[in-house]
Image (tube, rainbow, N blue to C red; front, side, top):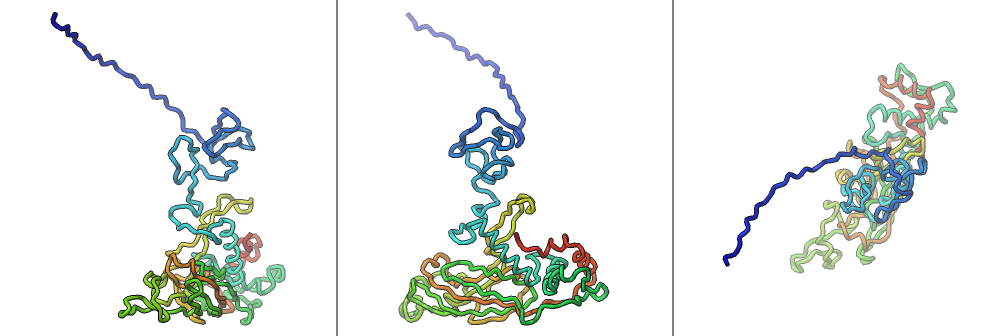
Length: 373
């Protein structure tokens, strides 16, 4: 019997997909599925003000994270809040710092306060401030030398016609100065001493430090190295040393020479909330490429006039190769003094009227001379 062939015909049935759209959730939408929702290794707790579980990153999220993800993981347990944020030092745009002030947001804020206090003492405006802001800062310094606004009372010794301060001026012997320690094992050592373009400063140094776990001890002039053709090696102090093949951070100087630059060790990125209401500030660590452009070598002493790019605070380090600071030890004392002192008592006539008005209005005055909280 011949085989039976059955004809098979494929039937095409239309498939209708129903796309049900739902509105994108917002920060104000809530869910009442449960009072506690586990999210991987996180636990979302109810908003303490509303008693309801809200989307992550809400205003009262106890983790304090913004609902603005910079990068998030892609697993299904992700709650949509990034562990890496542009507001923290873990952002990929910044190098990874281990230990010291730069890794701690609170320490960065405290250091900015120290530098701000020194700016007020010298009458120096913040980095990047314009001529009017610089004039206000300089006027604040002159007011302090006269005993403050309370001592002046209603008599503001600023002549609107000539633009000249006629009150008490700081004495030449009261020039701002500060001593700080530069550790050989730290890549950056901030001074907290403000540097302003156009002003003159002196830097003096005392002490010694060591390289190669104490096998080489030198002063801040450091030690030089040369290539020995006969031995076919780089040599320092009569001995071949393999580390001398590495590239110095400041190539135009000796190993372990004191190098300084000017810039912001920390900088304010933004204020998340108003400072007066206990708000949060986000401070970024040092921008190394900016400070690197201002570097100069310091022997036992140096006097310099700050150029337009040297604005911020004095920052120093021992000249070594990156990655070789682990075997450095010791530290030196660096003293920086402002020589162009006292500050000028003459002001631009275009600003005088506004400057005097700011002194007669204490709230405006406090805006630019109040010390950092």
